[in-house]
Length: 444
Image 1 (cartoon, rainbow, N blue to C red):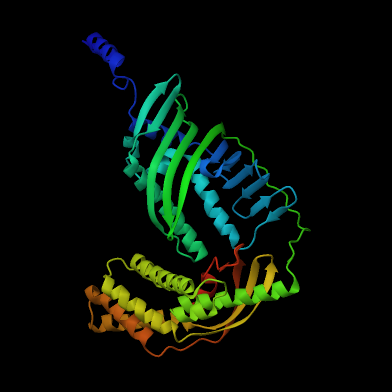
Image 2: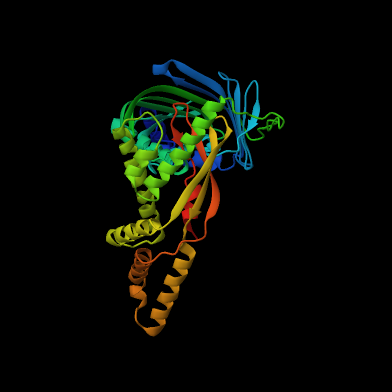
């Protein structure tokens, strides 16, 4: 009987390659995920080709997952990007610089995304679609498994939307400017993943993408072909670039430019505070520098205003599960009302180096810690007296916080702080970490 079963297996395998002995795509995903758990470092040769822009970048990526080290070379620019748990360094032909301002966070988001992709691309894709293995076809060729993506355009768009939203959410958090994927259309999305059958380790990841994406109202067309080929697993050595501590980047603007840009940086932060803390779009339009039209400034001010209150509402939802939208909206309105009682003054701005400024503020904020303590003491008192039950606790907590925010707010003594402002190449300004000033307006 066993021989007969083996016979039919051999007969069927002639016609159906996946019938006997060949694993399913789900099984291959599991094998690869298990094998990559043991990987502590990789070296990858990459090629990223933007076909519509006729731009091709090649280089090497090294990742030490155990020690959280990243080392990426760009053959085109001769630059090296290095990151470990302490430092972020950019090396070029004429300088080796340790990046210490907030711009490093933007680079780090990109590098950490690449780190997760190279660690295990199958696992990376599965975080967006747990059953994505169902959208791959498996072929066995010599000592290789070859996975080919067979999802349709709708599947590809859904996948890329989730990937983009995760990336944009992190970028929004660090830049203080909401980045929204309005729409994505995919004409073509080809993925081929080559895996060594013996080790179950990825050998090559190839991707071709033709798409149209609209982000914050701006539409861009992409036609890309990217290849990542693994040349070594484990025992990958990464050498930290040596920073020239004596080399300082100096401000190269003229005296007049320096004074103008310092004033503009101060004005931008002033405008941003108006839009966020005080929800005052007219104040933003009046103060923000730049050659934009009134309508464009109005739109940017509304964006900053809505982003600020939107983040507050989302954070409240996460921190207080089960609260209804009406409660959260009432609390948000009361909180914004309380912020109107704060005071601030822009002391001045100083160029730290080209494109970077330190803007000094004096802020009289509200004592959130004291307010929280008073609410908790009232809740405990009412609970002990039997005025409220455990069931009523959450609702009463909202009511007391709203009462406090809408009541008389005592301002704290002035505190002087410094906020980092960046001047972009197009003459616009940005604050990467709004918490630098928000945590002084609301002190807990």
